[in-house]
Amino acid sequence: MVESVSTDEAPVNEDLPFSQAIVHGDTVYVSGQVGIDPETGDVVDGGIQAETRRTMENVGAILEAAGTSLENVVKTTVFLDDVDDFAAFNEAYGEFVDDPLPARSAFEVGDLAIDIAVEIEVIAALPE
Image 1 (cartoon, helix red, strand yellow):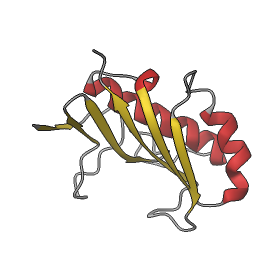
Image 2 (spheres, rainbow, N blue to C red; image 1 turned 90 degrees about the horizontal axis):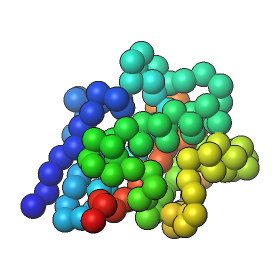
Image 3 (cartoon, rainbow, N blue to C red; image 1 turned 90 degrees about the vertical axis):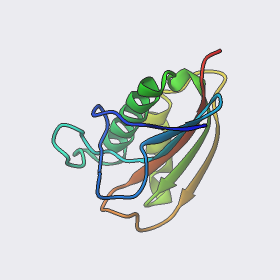
Image 4 (cartoon, rainbow, N blue to C red; image 1 turned 45 degrees about the horizontal axis):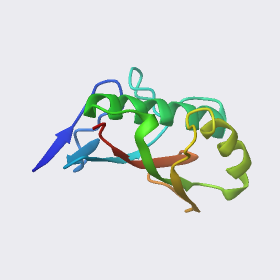
């Protein structure tokens, strides 16, 4: 059975055809999240590190709504507007992950859907 997850604690765009996350079995699949403040609907100021922090907060809120947390992330995929931001991204991202670190892929994709520096999607386990 597939269940959609949604929370107002992370940005919601009801005009786009995707869920914030989907739960299937004991796994949560979080759609790509960005550094948008859910209260204002605006991308946060401050560049890659501020966007990364807000994005990870958004991911955390969605995982909490699904019944899990950032501690249970097993795979992260990162889409960067500019790979030159990789070191700064890693510094901010590292504030949100602990050992064992999730598996991760990171790509420079150039232009993202909106004018942002980073988009992050994750796969997480539900606690047993």
